[in-house]
Length: 417
Figure (tube, rainbow, N blue to C red):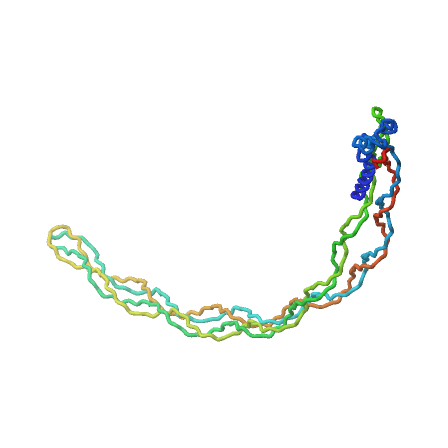
């Protein structure tokens, strides 16, 4: 639009400038009617001279001439176009939903319950018993006597003697026995389980696509709606034509492209799963009782006769002659009761605890999760494009004929034609 207005202004200015020239001279160099008296060189004899040509260019008259020119004109026209209008529709459908259902089941199992049992046994115990014995010993009873003579002196001599004694020697003995042992045995069993197998399914959907659409808008442009004015110069007396501009802001329509979002159907792949029943072999532990021989160590005692050398004091009497008061002794036999330790074996009863196990059948309630397929209705919105006929205003540029009045300078001399 701006280009068309510029072209029209250039054409108008060109026509005005050409109209203001006289035989190639500008309007300011030409004279009007008062200059006709100075056109004597325009006679028939002087028309061919160089000076006469200059005089012909300066003398002449202005004439108004009508000319037809092509002018661009913007016309608004009604045109019918087809537009796809998106319309949303409510649709009903069903889909399969896997629902988890819990069930209570009674499951039997076997447990080994430990219990303690008291048993009675006998064992040999070496017991020390104190025994009363009569022992005879000799004592020397001193007495004093004033005599001349000898005296008996008691001298102690240590004699080495062999002594026999009995000791209880402990020893360990290996004993063979059997006991019940709970042994875990792995048993192969077939088990059924459910797996989800993936598969792909084609699903129809819609997506948003950006589309360019022509939109009519307006914008403000500056237009020069001026006019031509004629004025006479007081100094020279020549008339001149001047353009008086008038800049006006005008709203001009124009077409531009905008991006519009549109729902477009397309097909995409969805990964879903379905349940399948499969079997597998698993190892299940099972407790089994088994008689196992084992060896244990028992601590026992046996009596042994041993000998040892001990020092036994012995009194030796010796006669010593001297005169003095002598303390003499006389031996007397006496008896006394002493306690002698004696080791005696005795069988003693005792009670001990034995840990045993017994199998018991019990039941327990377990929760089993089961997948159940269920069809569930649902409502979804589908976007459908429907064609629609619409009328829009379109700006069309036409070139139309326009009659324009132009002033043309006509020289007075015939040689200047």
